[in-house]
Image 1: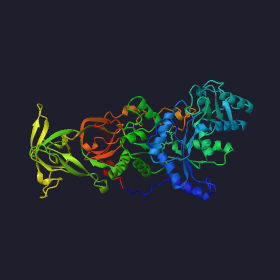
Image 2: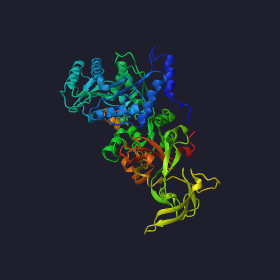
Image 3: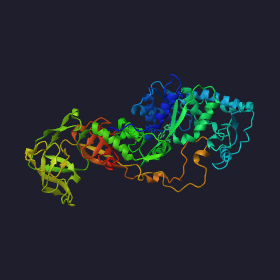
Image 4: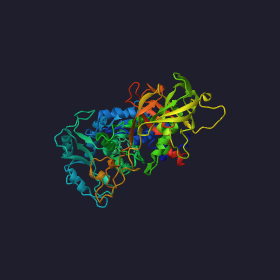
Length: 588
Ligand code: ATP
Ligand code: MG
């Protein structure tokens, strides 16, 4: 799949910076970072950010850091750290020696706060979270100064040290920047820099600290400590940029002043893309776990059978823009099909079996028939598949009274069995309810391999599996996790309330909700997983390795699930063959 290099306005900015020598001074290299908070598993939106940050670093011969933004022990876990590392590696990126944790900077962050206090740029405030919200004002009304704002430097230093030593209760005070309560930008109205969190050990620093820095405070400093040149984040941080710059300007100790650049986050149809919501699906058992193949997490996509190549291709094709939009999930599936088409071996699997007996085939004969593994790639070779007198075909490949235009098996009709012979239906056997339970055919021995010398036409080509050699298996058919293209955007408009991100002092650039969200879980698709438990697959799949990917002829792409046991493989449908993206004419 050849696509032209998509536009990326960040590349233009970096090119300009290289020309002008700032923030890329003489000899400096492009340094980016991917800064996940270890409070959940990565999703496909993070993949966009990973591809962008690691991709730009590679393009400019620079480096990309992996930095765990671990400043909130109440939500973070070491387990997530390991999972995130695994996912970034699996996507094909390498941070080399550049693995960092914001918690490694806690001492320096503390010293920086002391410096701000000494400059009269920060103060300890005893207003409650509610009062901070009231004093903050709104988009149309300026805020009011905190009554603690004019405290003397020495008193602030002593109180802040007291906070560090654990002398105050959680929630009783915070350290705030002293900027401007009448700023039109709410983020500049004396934002919170430090809050007290007690009784929750941090996954790395244990109980050493009971005060933790806010994202807005720690992020610019961490970037500067690491010498990041371009700090790329999502659009909801645009209004935080003045604060990012304010902090670095006030702290003269850093040589480098990274440039914050915002881009539009990825949204996908029929899914949700927020760790908080994904966690809700896991903890409410709406899915089996973070790696449920229906989840948009990297681990879910991996288990579903996605390849890292397909995900990277997708991230390249969608490009990087400055305006929010929702990408059609069909585009992601299109990228996947294009990739799997090249690499997946073709095999035969019957999902809903119906017995077919070939009356004129010798009783105890088994033939080993040659079958190519991938018509797109001869180097993938071929294999032998056993054929016998009794085989399975799909139930819906037979119809006793076929409608017009039915190109499969019916009484008196002839079809091709893929790689085998032509067979013609001569009789059916029914159960007491009149349901067809067995189809009887005759075969033409002159059509071995599935070709006739006289060139006569048949109704169609069916896949099949020999009954004697078939391997019983379970096949899991997945559909979209949600029934609506945008499961989150269906509620009534919010009343004139302050947006959430503004109310919670520590809220980290959360997108401002503009609508009262109907509970997104009410849009879950009850048919997102259908288990077919009586499937039969060809014997070459008996002990296929977990993660192996195949094309089941006429059905789609499937991969071997981790739940498989020897001689009982379980397959996840990765994606069907039906390509709504290509059919829509949107594919190049
Ligand atoms: P979520 O909103 O899903 O909880 P987050 O932004 O809180 O994600 P972080 O761990 O802070 O999660 O994200 C790490 C990086 O990934 C950040 O730089 C963030 O901007 C980026 N990122 C997160 N979600 C997306 C997305 N949907 N599209 C692009 N980048 C994203
Ligand atoms: Mg978030």
